[in-house]
Image (tube, rainbow, N blue to C red):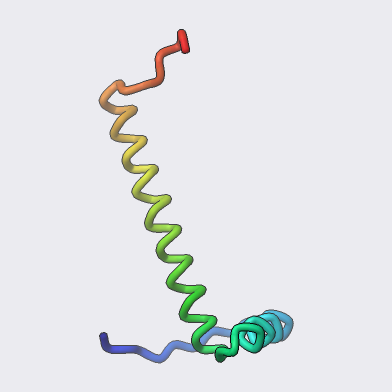
Length: 68
């Protein structure tokens, strides 16, 4: 997969936290950032799909019965 360079400005304390995580994992800052982005995208994609599924169920009248 082709990679594209991007620039992000973050507070110094966040850089220090990234470096501490990288050091604890015997990794580097780039890998920690890539892992964080991948995790964020996966969670947000899952959440978005779950919301769409719930909206489709609601539109179809598929609700939990009140007598439960």
